[in-house]
Image (tube, rainbow, N blue to C red; front, side):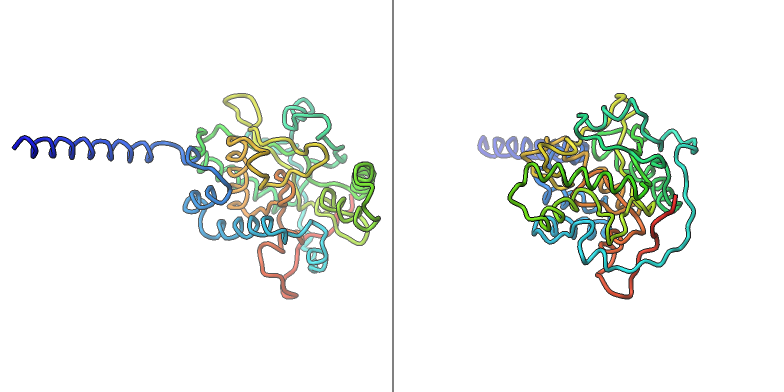
Length: 308
């Protein structure tokens, strides 16, 4: 009889403990249990939705295998463009507190170092209407996802660093980056140096730069509860690219989770991330078209170079 009572007591303690563990899992934000990009994608697969998961997983696998193309690789450039003549929207003229242009005083806060900040073009607040509409959807997506990542709905806002970039500014940025990389990569041939530079800045020769079409945007996420940007790591460290799926050794756990929140919200809204720059997203350009479809001559981009 004594053994039976002891058995029942142990059994009840076990049940209480199991219920406690279940409730902890149920009411604790998912990010507590994330340990790697692969694990995180699996954990957030349901809330991100299957179509979004497939795109992000395809990008992650491509990055991991070294097959993800740079923004001006041949497979990107050969995608045809059928201009749809969609008008531009100037975000600086839009009165939306959750979606705005990054002020000069916010630049250093967002980039963490002056070395990370490139010159913006004079028309940097412009973008195609379709991209603007995607950003509006992204605000809603962030609100939906925020509690899963430990944030309040309504606390997170999108800040634009740069949208449209004229060809003159594109040339300046490309030439400057090429000269910078040449100093630290003296063994590279001219062709190799050009290809390495093209990972950082889209070329202006024999190419249609995404920013020059109004299709691309560089964005960050602002927390209006803390009065600060979400920490996502340096935009570049020692001349090394800052891809979305940077190694865990480079990012803190919080930075990794913040990037995933940005990535999921943007992708669900219809934007595509440039895998070598965690802050760069686009819609309707050749790069986004590549990831949305298995490449075929039947598919085409809808935004060409804007003459401003």
